[in-house]
Length: 112
Image (cartoon, rainbow, N blue to C red; front, side, top):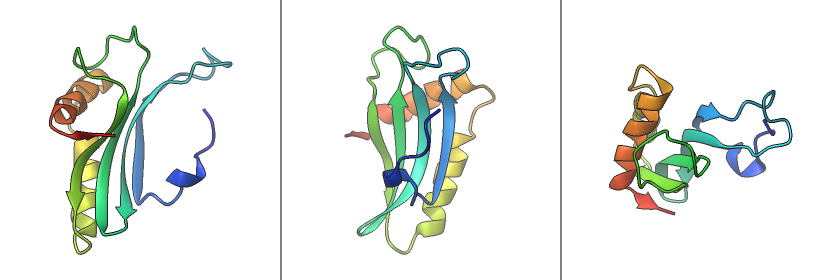
């Protein structure tokens, strides 16, 4: 995969749940699913980034590719934000089930 963009280097915690295998698709397209926790101007945010191919059957039907704000925490809740991101990113036994769980959270999340 590509190196981490500068906008993501300051994240407190980040996990790529799934990504296109660069050995199989060396020229692209590159798709991925990730969750991360980052510091915002007045608190901490946990984001779910969904970038799957249109014909990919992972996740829940009808969920669009986008960045979803899963939860927002105050300036004093840094550890809670990181804990929420870590627990959310590890709450399923398989990658496909985890993407389904994240899609379910995305239904109630703010889409950006």
